[in-house]
Image 1 (cartoon, rainbow, N blue to C red):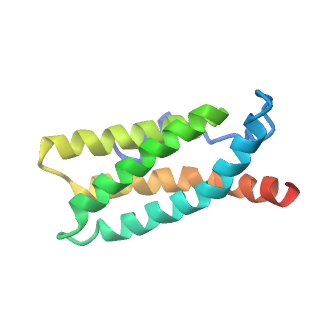
Image 2 (image 1 turned 60 degrees about the vertical axis):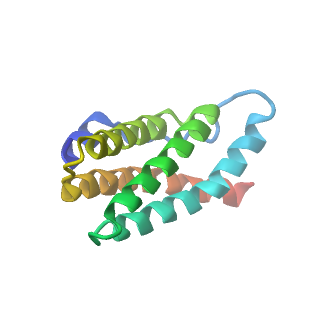
Image 3 (image 1 turned 90 degrees about the vertical axis):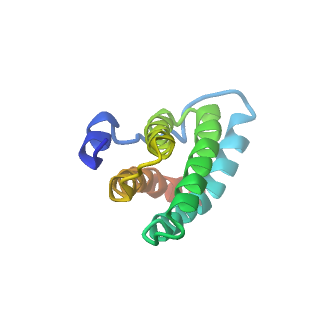
Length: 132
């Protein structure tokens, strides 16, 4: 999957922080948004680490694990676009790792595309956190 393909199959995330849900969802959503910045930063560090041959496989494995956590939490609060993008990237990473012949340039490109999508979620997140 190329970066262009990921972006073409993933709609730009819509801010969903105001989506109605069960009463606890507001607290859960607020906590997710606070933690999500850290997850995003961790993925950026792992993207950098994946440039080093001795660290690339561990970095990609760690990135897939973070994406798995994002998928679980974002699903619970209804951030569907973020979930979809994270699923695509996690599946891409795990598939490439299973092949044992990894084009790290390709995998880094897909992860970088996810981070671009992620920033579209993070920017509205700033506004929500400021209001809260």
